Image (tube, rainbow, N blue to C red; front, top):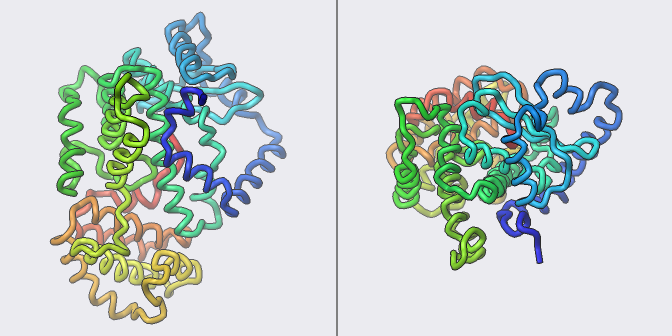
Length: 403
């Protein structure tokens, strides 16, 4: 019989994780990183933490260590833990790749001050979930931000995997906390930066209705939601809460709950909001998205000195065998771009338009640094699509690291 941590892991996380580990580029980067770590002469993780943060011993924070004990027991972790705090106004926590048999978890001071015990249990369990599932074995940050840009197909697979990896880590946190309202409230705080004493009060049912409305109508995220996070590496917060609600109703958390197969099917439906395959879709909306992407991608790639070899390679990976790149006229497509922007604005939801702009940012990112002319064109396209301010910049600069 599997251990509890393995039982609750999201199927799509494990499937994509095992596939990515065999990818030649992932293997190459892993070998490079491992060699760099072996050759590193400077201080390791522990020395860095000791010199920049405060180590929280059991005598200093018995309650936090009791939470750690519970998480270790629930997740079957035998490694020694060291807990650290550092000063920061943002709510943040991180679990570092093990070193010398120790696992290190770091918390921002504001998070420790603003989160309840059950909320902290979720955060700690989430971070330890990344450890127990060995998510750090895929160096996503090195791959996506390295000097050599990864193929578009690999980048999209990494984005998809990282979102499902967060689902697994969320489940680990929820399994430790066993308190869905506190778990949801923790995610709300992490997304909004708000504390319990703010003028905004968290409403779990309202948060979940937001996702139900998106599932039913394909409409834009509701007010107050961090829309800029919609198509980055981390799942949109209400989707995480919806996925955790399904997990809480499953047989993994309660007797008589829905079985694992049904749970994973329903989670894929929820997460599918972030992964529409518009390049092959047959609906009016997907045609508008596809037409916009073709015109936008060619225009962006051609803006600064013509389409480079790297941009051409990425475009061919997006188009696959659907379109012949050499038959596309950049000048003509640039002329058509305003009409295609207008058509997409009329026929698609905001979330669908954000998907296209995210993909256009991937094309622009094929060559680093992104040319100013390309950034300006992307911002013009986003403005025409009524996108949130700063979305383009956030897509271009987003950190790919797991949280």
